Image 1: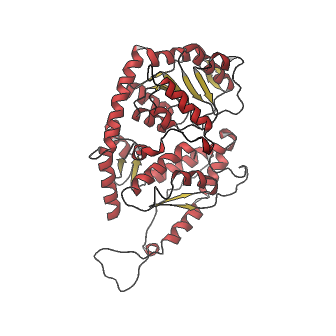
Image 2: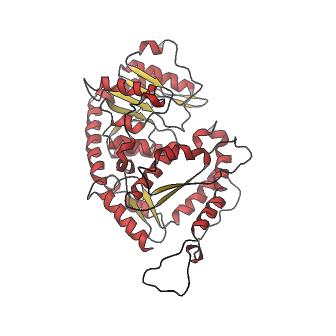
Image 3: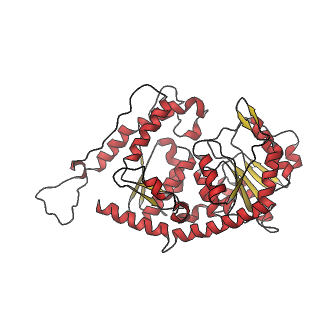
Length: 412
């Protein structure tokens, strides 16, 4: 998993622990430090960390334990997936070690001690055989495990998903239900604070906070935030077009670039000085979207990004790239009407994918940040943001769903 996949799981752990449950987060050595930094014992005493070894496997670089560390997704994703399957054995050993604790069965008096590990249980595994694409076979295996689940936790809120919940639940066997508990990150707002402490190596981020503060005065919401997450591989040709499109738009922007090989077009940084920032370091996206200066988000439409943007009341300029992102973009643009799309007209096909032209990028940015369609999308996003915050508050749909879920788990 990449960081974007890990954060919602940590948010879930925090939410469960706030209901006085003990939570154990299981991870691997390379990921443990960043996770423990986000779960300080003083703030989360009910959460503990358990570390299991990451398997060494042929074809996978040493020390690679999450997808953001892969030199190339296309080249290394299959060996990485095979390595994750080998995590099953150490994970089961960890569970078995914890199963030796005495088991308290309410309203039953037994003349002997019974441990959790001695309770009979059975898992039905549907074999997937036959030749085929290894990646597809892996995903089918994951899918079958999902279908046979007792239930599914959804990092969203019922008001956003109401018409989709029955369809989602229909995929699961034995009456499993979907529990909408999100937006989970709203349960722990302290994690999205401005970087103010220069003494901890955050001087660059401190300057970013000051830059945003200066642009939050007149008018607020004038800055476009641009980020495509940690996994999408964007070609240098496309990054060039994006750079020129942002320059042409005249809109202030903060752009987080993941590529380590791309170079900013000659002279561009000088021309955008004071109006645009191009950053090559990790930035707290929740902080960015919650800042008063930010009024639009050019996004790949990963679900974390969609949920964080909606919750902050910030409309999205959708640029989906992979996986479920086209569906998320369709939801945000057509279903929720809280965003717009980059126009595909005039794009060209290159060896490494479709390249959107700078003119289309410029038009999209200008429309979202200052056009009539953009204003309607912003009004809709802000309304959805208010609903999202109500959902996690006292009496909200997500808070109530969490209470019911915990109650049912305790009865299992």
